[in-house]
Length: 68
Image (tube, rainbow, N blue to C red):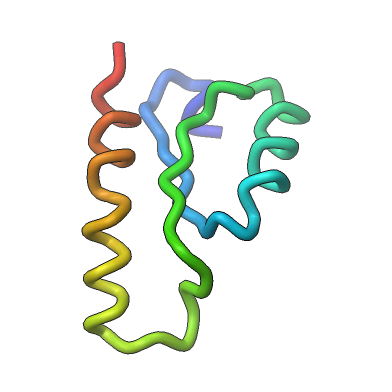
């Protein structure tokens, strides 16, 4: 996995799956894996909604990939 190799990584998902994402990260030994969470759903939405959700996630992604 990239994060375990020292490559900054952020997992994007929805708030609905936050518990599962944190459990999986912990089980894989990367409990501090950054998450960029947005409102559900991600699939089956229009381009405008995709852009809106990407904007919501941008700060978390930038923070996750630039942490030291």
